[in-house]
Image (cartoon, rainbow, N blue to C red; front, side, top):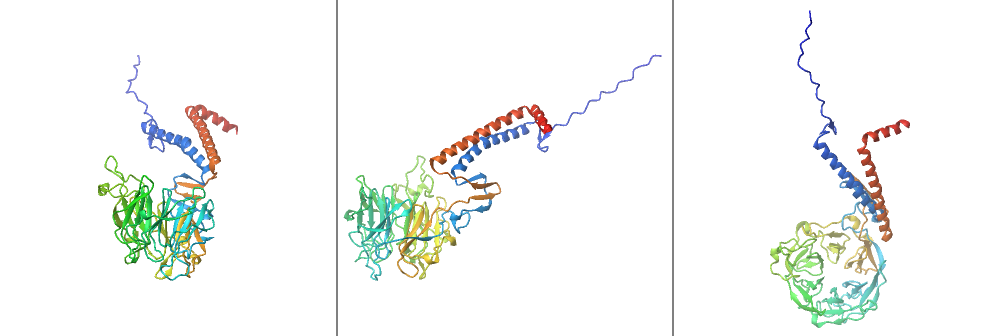
Length: 509
C-alpha cells in the first residue's frame, strides 16, 4: 500500500522586523524626520566651528572680555577693581566714584562763569567777583586750560572780554566762539554778543570783540544755547527783571560764514532760566534751572523738523523724535515745531538751585547744588530714547559726591574720559580750590556666569599688533576646525572601517 503525502497547510510568513528608532525612539531611523534633524545639527556644527569659534578667537585677543554662549541671565558677576564701589555690573551712564582733581585758577569766585570748549582748549568765561555782595560785581576775566591725553593742564589767565559778564551762554560754531547775553556790571541781563576766533598758531583766543550785528532781540541772562548744523539756537533765560522767559531764537549760518538775524521759533511751554540744553538726535532736551515758581524738576522736549522721506516719513531713526511727521507740517527744516514737558516719574526727583548740569553721549546729568538751603551731593542721570523720551532719572549712592567734596554753582563738563565739576563753592560757601572728577566709562564685568553662557577675560592687546594677532588667531582656529570637520566627515562615511580600526587600537591598549 502506497502512502500519500500529508496535506500541506497554509505557508507561515516570518514576522516583519520592527522599524529601527533613533534619538530615544523619537524618530524613525530611516525616515525624513531623523534625516532633517541630523542635517540641522550638522549645519549648526559647521556654523559654530567655522564661524562662531574663529570670531571668538579674534576677540579673545583684542577685547578685554569675551562672551561664550548667550549669557542672558548672569548669576555670578565679577567686576574689575577700577570700578571701585559701583554695583556690578554698573548701571548704564554711571560714573566711577568722584575724587579730588587738580587745583583751578578761575576768574573771581569761580561762580557764574560759563564753560566753552574751543579745539583743544577749555575756557572759563567771566563770572562773579570773589567775595562781592553786589549783584553787578561781575568780571570780564577768562581762564583757559589745554586739553591733553592726561586731562587738563594748569589754568591760566587769557584775553578778557571787552566788558564784565556772568551767566552768559557760550557756543563755538564754524571757527568762531560766541558769548551770548549775560549780566554785566550795570545790568542784570544784556542783549550783547561777543565773538572771538582762535589763533591758528597757538589755538587760543587772543582777542574778543563786541558783535553788534549778532545782538539778541531782547536782554537775557542764564539762557541756554545749542549748536546745530546750520546755526545757533538760544532758549529762555531771564529778562532784565530777572524773570524767566519762554523765548526761543535761532540764528542761521550764512554762506559767508557769519550768523544771520535771530528769528523766533516755537516758544518753550513754560519759562526757563539757568537750565542746560542738549541736542539728542532730532530732539532738544532742556533740564534743570528755574521757572516762574522757582527751581524745577520738569524737563522740556523740543521736536526738530527734519527732511521728509519719499514716502512722506521723517525722523528716520536713532534718537529721533517719535512724533508723527504729519505734525511737522510745513515747518522749515531745522526749526523746532513742537514742545512737550515731562511729568511724574520723568521729572527730576530733587530739583535744586546751583546744580552742575552737563550732557555726554545723549545722557543728561545733574550733580550737587542746594535744596531747601542745604548743599546736596546727589547725582542723577537719564538717557532719553526715541521711543519713550525720559522715563526716569537714575541714582546710585556710590555715584553721589563725597561728603567732603560737595559743590554748588559749579560747572560740569566732560574732558576725555572724565567728568569734571569746575569752580563753584564747597559746603561752607568757600570758593572751591580744586576740581572734582569722575571717570565716565565703568568697565564691564571681567567674569560672568549665567544660565546659557559665560564671560571670561580676554587679552585686550591694543592697536594694530593686537588686530593682526587677532586675525592670526581667528585663521588658526578656522583651519584647525576645518581639518577636524574633514576628519569627522571621513570617519562618518566609513563608519564600519573606522569602528574596526578604533576597536583594534582600543584592544591593543
